[in-house]
Length: 173
Image (cartoon, helix red, strand yellow):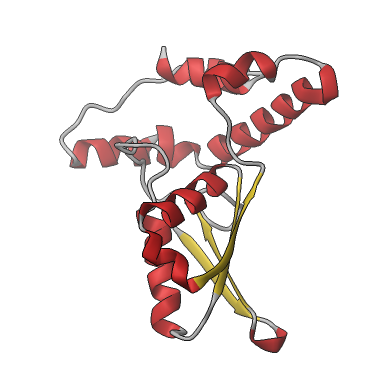
C-alpha cells in the first residue's frame, strides 16, 4: 500500500491510503489473492495505528470515497472504541450493490452509461499499466513461487470491454 503523509499549515496532516497500482506512481508489486471478505480494514487499521504512534494527541477526520467510504465506515463500526480518536467520518459516493447497480449503470438517464464507460476506461488503464505484474512474467513467477498454477485470462476480451460488467465477466466466466 502506498502512503503519503504531508504536514500543512496550522498542524493539519493528511494521510491517504492508496492500493498498489491506484496511481501512476505506485505500481502493483505482486498479484494479490482475493480478500476473504470484501472491505477488509487491516491496511486502514495499520495506517491509523502508524498515525497514532507518531501523533498520539491527534484527532482525526476520516473521509472515504467509493470503496474507501465502505472501508472507513466498516473500520469505525467494527469497534466503537476506534471512534474516540475521530471527530467525524465522511462517506462520499459510497459503493453500491454491484448486482443491482449493473442494470442501473447501463441506463442513459443522468449520463449513467457515460459514467460507467469512464470508470471502465480508468480500470483498463490500471490493468494495462500493471499488465506484466498481473498477467505476465511477474504473475507467473509469483504463482510458481507459491506453488500454484497461474490463472488464464482472455486479455483481448478484457481490454475491449465497454462496461465494468464486461470486465467482470472476462475475469469470472
